[in-house]
Length: 109
Image (tube, rainbow, N blue to C red):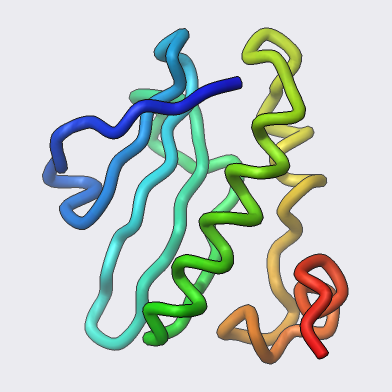
């Protein structure tokens, strides 16, 4: 599956990527202190996965790189919200770089 950058929206003011088939979107949302990477179906009020990337731009880039790399392995028609949730589990500790599950997924030292 491939993604294209689109113009920022009110929901994703920093970055928004939409799959070429128009079914999936990925984007950054910022709250007061942290940035979240949200993955979901276009127009859906809830995300299939919402990942706390903390405040470090290098962590934002690393997580986005991992997410895109995994999603590129699938055809758009194969992807479901349940599969996305399995691929990108909710961290047990936030931000992600402090979570043992994500340290293993991203192979951090």
